[in-house]
Length: 197
Image 1 (cartoon, one colour):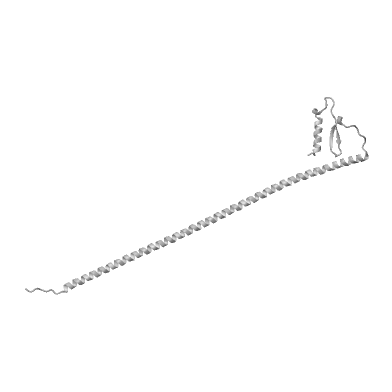
Image 2 (image 1 turned 135 degrees about the horizontal axis):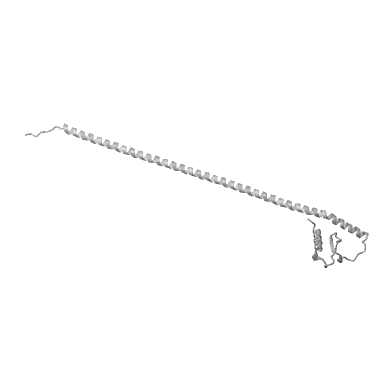
């Protein structure tokens, strides 16, 4: 890519050489290069040329040579500066891209850790719920067992009471029968008195 000065000079030369920039139909304007005191190269039309000046002195010639040498020496430094700036921009883009990748990696790791924490919390909650269910089932089983034991004990007590009632009833019946038998035997053994005629 050309420096800005050379690009402007090239554009000026291109415009000057086209047919639309000619002074007339017959005479073509002529360009000539001019180097100013800063060492910048420009082109001017021939009819705009200043009147011929006196020959430069030795000091002026040395200054002009130094200016041209400085301009010539500054071109590689400018190109080098452009190259360094381009490299710097490229390094910055690469660093920004690396930072973006690093941030994306960190976000993925955070998401993975959050998912892992959620999964561990879910498993813990499921374990707690299963333990509560197991304890509730154990309590219900124990309560059912106690209720069954109480019902069995109540039934056994009722059966024992019924058997005791039956035994007492049988004993009372036996006593009654024995008394009846005794009374009958006493009536048989009593002497019979006859009335006199």
